[in-house]
Length: 264
Ligand code: NAP
Ligand code: GCO
Image (cartoon, rainbow, N blue to C red):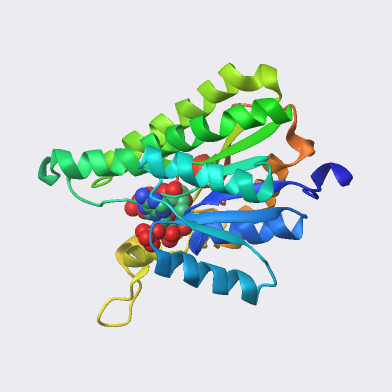
């Protein structure tokens, strides 16, 4: 079972003050990794550090906007100065804007692409050279159901997450010879702040229509929890996946396999 251990490894998880990134960090810490994270605001980094401390995790936190290449390069330099290495990168930071495409401005479209696709490129580019020097590396890109499926109002997000699937495959293709594995995790519908608007109870206390829709589309008949992603992330960060490369591991309770429950 040592092949699943992350002892001695340093994991850098972007946007991990809370939500999916935080859950993945907890799981990687439990497997032995040292945790480094960033968030866009100092107050979020402080909140994250306090949350990690509550979990008994002595994490390193940095303020960094992942869309800003100068800030990213500066932050990676600080991390390497502090830890000497980054063995595992999780490109987790992400945003979504739910706007009908023809009502969405080009600026709003570009903003989503910037965080969800350009930033994983920027951060991976900053981290890969030292992974080549280390002789190994693991990059995990947090993709989505929208890497495979579309739906109303999420055109920018789907375009970004579809692109992130192919960026994942291209990093795998270009850097596999340096013993760097780049894979994706495609979460299903997970109960985090990002999806809170889709789960809000109606004024009469009934489920949000989208909430009921997702329950009907998920064989597991439930929303995922961020903790459901921890084990798959540890697997993709560990030696157990050294011959897994360019793969998107969907952790969706079966949504992509299922036509949906027949309405009664
Ligand atoms: P979340 O709760 O909204 O957390 C996203 C995190 O990213 C926040 O800490 C956010 O900080 C940070 N962030 C946003 N823009 C940033 C930037 N420019 N620089 C640095 N940090 C930034 O989202 P989540 O649900 O945990 O999702 C995490 C990832 O999983 C995202 O890539 C998302 O697309 C993906 N995903 C989520 C689901 C789901 O159902 N929840 C499913 C599939 C994939 P702020 O609070 O300051 O914005
Ligand atoms: C939405 C949701 C989804 C999830 C996730 C599904 O509005 O449809 O936010 O996009 O966040 O990406 O995998």
